Length: 429
View 1 (cartoon, rainbow, N blue to C red):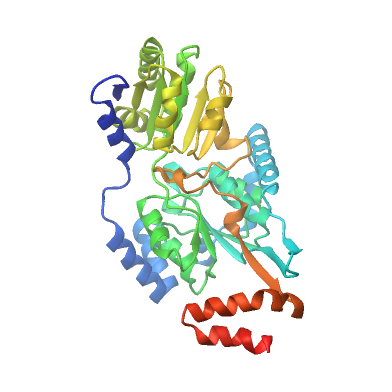
View 2 (view 1 turned 180 degrees about the horizontal axis):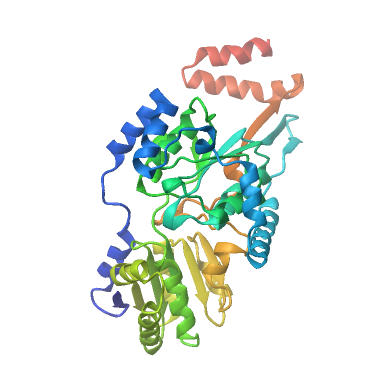
């Protein structure tokens, strides 16, 4: 864990190194992924079957090996412990309500020149969701991806998920039932992303692909952008906590570890104006790590990427936060509102001492699929808009055409496009 003090002579260079540290996969997987994509495009289901048996030890021999049925998802939901089932239902209800408010309104108006202008929003026809298997099999992530798609009005929602050795995650299946997923295919990796993008004999192609995955999945989405839409190319999780000394150090330590346990490359940063409090948080992190079931993941994350920054006053944290453009920012302080107004770049902001980031991962309502690696400077979290597109429309009367047409013709001539100009001028005559 790095410990920095803003008054130290080398602070600017040390902090800049943290800002520029991408912490993303160092392995060059691009060529391997490109080869997999080409195989699936050319061979379809045959390539999927071979690669699934190779990487997941799951043969795709029968139709039941290829797909998980809606009946299986319903059975998984019914078999849940009632308390857990209620928790998933509550999460889904709150996620659905939050995203329903994001649905944009169509626009249709006549301007001062008499030109009718507007736009209509429509959902994509089909969306594909990638759901990881193994350690990162999170039902909450399925809800966060599937529910906005359904709220947007997407008619066909296809999930791909690896099932190593044929094993499925009942929580994921239950979440798929709650969200109304239409298809679940037992394939994963870059080959599953290729199947969604190109289509195979069994799996029909989609228009948008969302959902988290490993370096191969992320690279496949990056390479296929343009063939399909994607949500984002995400990196390891990150959290920035800006805290005064009046916090309970155990609370802040737990908040920092809530992201560290995701991935050895995840990053947890504390900025505080109280050096003694910083010491207490560091001690609390060490104490909690020794008792954490996910210590093998969280400890290397904290040791290699954790940072504590001590500033002279919390106002100094604002430019640091905006430089980091973190996925999650907690404002754990007495008067957080001015800081919220000053934060320009963040995936999501958690306000006050009683809003830990972890509640946002499950039941708060806003999406937990957020930009990482400083991408919050130009990107937003997943929303209903990722599953919709806007089509503009224009209608002119004879009168309104004569008001604005000459200017269009003049610009067309100026750009050296006489056919453009003629299509306007023949109507003016």
